[in-house]
Amino acid sequence: MVSSSCSTTVFILITLSVLVTLVSATEYNVGDQSGWTLDYDYQTWAKDKVFFVGDKLVFNYASGAHNVMKVNGTGFQQCITSSANGTLTSGRDVISLQTPGRKWYICGVAKHCELKNMKLVITVLPQTSAPAPTPALSQYGSATLAVPTIYVFGVALLSSLVSFLV
Ligand SMILES: [Cu+2]
Image (cartoon, rainbow, N blue to C red; front, top):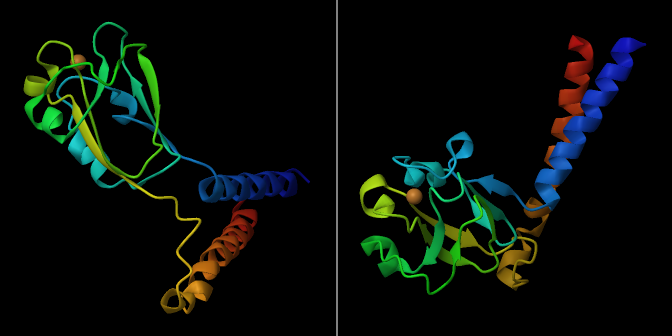
């Protein structure tokens, strides 16, 4: 009985996590465990991630040690620390990505941007839920629909494997 309730729990957890991944927005901790800090390679951090409208960036740092400024491309390249777009200083700054396109963030404290690489640039993609319904694309409709089915099938397969192992 223990093993069956265990595998049921695993099945539910996997199903939930898949559903959460498919449906809800992702919250990204900038710099992962390192947070928003000196001498971290945020270009590499962002490189393998795909950001969508609705996702969130969370900048974690000791309040007062750093801040977060949203800038434009020029401000990013030249580390212009004008606070025209407002400066976030809470130490746990959450930014909702509301529009697609390039987004630039820098730290405005001292020369952290210029000398310590505290700068992040990302590209936000539009939400994928509403593709343009053009005739040319409609033939791919079934392929798009097949993806969640593969997920569900994968989960079922995985959970039956897990129930063997538990
Ligand atoms: Cu800083």
